Amino acid sequence: MKALAASILTVGLMAASACSSGGTGTDSAPSPASAETSAEQTRPEYVAEVESTIDQLMRDNAIPGAVIQVSSPERGDWTGTFGTSTIDTDDPIDAGDHFRIGSNTKTMTVTAVLQLVQEGRLSLDDPISKYIDGVPNGDTITIAQLAEMRSGLYSYTFDPEFNAVLDREPDKAWTQEELLQIAFSHPVEFPPGEQFEYSNTNTVLLGLVVEELTGMPIADAFEERIFTPLGLENTSFPAIDDASIPDPHPQGYMFGTNVSTIDTYELPEQEQAAAVAGTLKPDDVTGDNPSWAWTAGAAISTVDDMTTYVKALVGGGLLDEQMQQTRLDSVQPVGEGSAGYGLGMAGFGPLLGHDGQLPGFMTFMGHDPESDLTIVVATNLSTVPSGEGSALTIVKGILPIFYGSEYRQPGDPARAPGAGESTSTPTPGG
Image 1: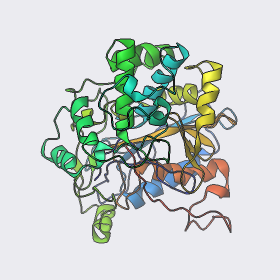
Image 2: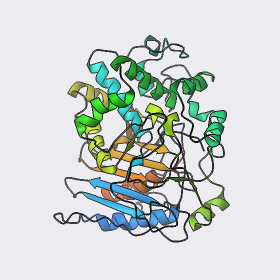
Image 3: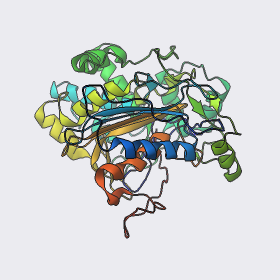
């Protein structure tokens, strides 16, 4: 498995990056959705269809547990919990659980960069060599190209020996210098700005720039610039030697190893069937140290905080109006479908936000600036046996409930004739 920090997969309306895997490991189906709307609220009309869709997706894809939060001014707010926190036990997942949020962290890193641009402390056109020595093509790679994944720098997360070390030493605390040394030992992939290629190396460099210009550890910069202003009391960024997750939290699961899935997350066909049947058990990787992801993917949060955060990320509140518009305008198509990427922000059809994938966990956060619909999904595995990110499997399944037949997937009997096909093909990411 490529140890990457996110997973924006091509799913007809999405595309871009990847990292990790998991499954139920039980013979029984996931438990029914347990969360209900509060007593003061009317249960939104869409809930029954969302619940039945998610229950089926979890059965078909060996997903042990999930929390889903929907916020919609037009159709109502709802939070649902599904399945278990610990496989082979009756341990319901909780709406307040903490999850590793993977590459959603990238949006925080780039937000801090854009705030520093507003403050006149750097420019998006600055070369990275102005702040960090020894970067290949550093004199011509700009801050903007790093944030938009157009630098051409090799992502250290594809290095075979790096993945082997992750398997041998899952508790290793990686330094940023070690990560960059691995990245820079490989040739650049293409000249700066020539194309899009998702690379964790880019966001690690940006994290170092934020630390240099703010004069504080990145965790403190996130706290001061993002977490405290938005009231994100359950969001944190751990030190590199801290592999813990705040309570409450589910266990996180994955199939295979970092090395065995370095080229694809898809299990062999026979193993896929065994995983869905529950006879092939996933590994518990909850305690694996996420320091290798650093500012590309090590943050921790809850669905409540992610909902608050993605609304501000897309709708405004972290940047001034001009910089916010610059960020929104930067999201441009990448690859096939209607997926896009820009300054630390991804486009998923009508939704803007990001997703994140680490060993044992996957999360998705998206906000529609037109309708104000927000969807957040958190699961306690990374990829389903077929190789797709688990949270994206759920997002794909429920989007038609909110947006109609245009987003139905191949094989869905209710799918409208002529609707676009989905490929689920991963592209380089992290």
